[in-house]
Image 1 (cartoon, rainbow, N blue to C red):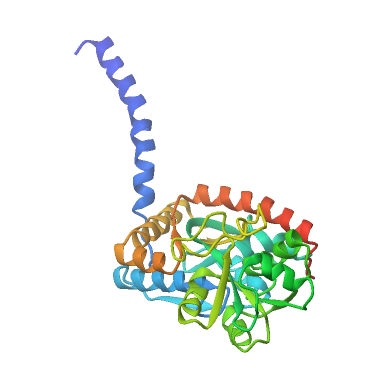
Image 2 (cartoon, helix red, strand yellow; image 1 turned 120 degrees about the vertical axis):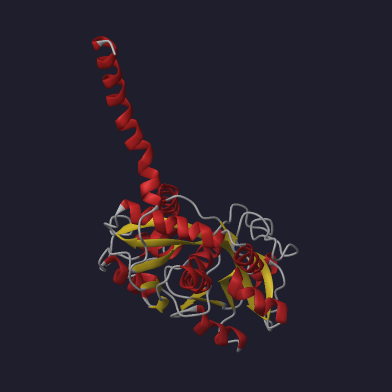
Length: 329
């Protein structure tokens, strides 16, 4: 080979090698070994709600295929802050994950004057999981059957609304209702929706803006009455139930969402491996059918998309908290 041609070939090879290495990075990220130890998924509320359901679906499917025990650890309290703080302070070795919520990663930073963790800096985003509207349901003894009738009733009769904890979307849905309707229903916080439901059924609280998956069985059994959904559009799970916005409070929108997080510092290749395993489970037909029937809109995505969503939601809910005047120490 001519010396000049040989040098040219070497130069081209030198350019190609970095390109080959760069294109190989995504593939390497997908082949990270995970899990190598038992994994714990922390849920910041008691069993029975939407975040717990999502965690147990992941734990069940991962446990069947990934060769390690996957358990769910419920750590309720302080609107999700206790469980979130536990994960924030855990070692980033991929053995501890968190089902974050709109409360723990968007509402609480504005609602609590002091937070035990930084909801952005202390976590590694993995994947968005699902969203769901909240459903305004009332005790059957409450005479109101529409939002307008409920507002009129609240203007002359003391009414209460329960929640799964201060700072949750269930709580802020009620505060937003108070603000837009010009009423003052009293908020009664519980450690979880499982503790609130008996008081709702017994008439000790008037209503709850519950997550759709939790409220749907109670509505279908006739134990409570559905008034409206909190999302901007009607839910496919209850297409005959109107939105609060179309029922007399235009602009009302307050949905719950759930995402998978890890402690800050998780290696990128492991982050992407868990992301891929999450998407794989949520794409399973039986999983998607089950979650859809519960009123959950399944939508896994990239870590970057989740990080952007959290930033946007933080700004949105800070405005709602400020306008409602809600504040916790």
